[in-house]
Length: 133
Image 1: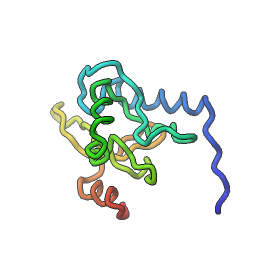
Image 2: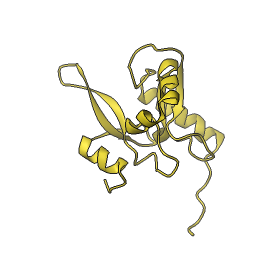
Image 3: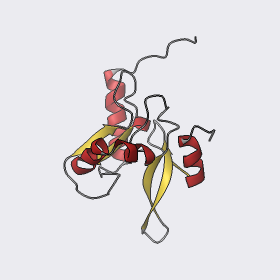
Image 4: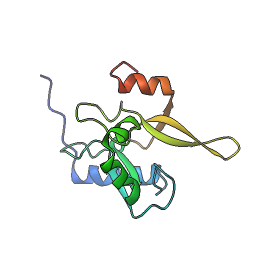
């Protein structure tokens, strides 16, 4: 057993919520529409120490309800993270702006500083199936 990691403080959690809100542009990341009041949703169910930006996505109410009602599809698209997985390493769907200003769907890893790192669909699938990234 290694040393215990420091548990994030209330201030750390507030910072994580602010980072996720700014990173996501105060938009539902699943539909990019106004689908109801916005929440910073925990991709992996909330537990002590996991309120970090890599574990948060902005979701509107309708998309949050969808996530709750469709847990398997939410896992497959990265809106949910299994309890055993590391949110830093579990891909999520994202919308990426192209050079001409249109949007395209893709896969990404999120970090705790507000970064969105695009990965290939093959890499996302490998990670979700338990393979190395």
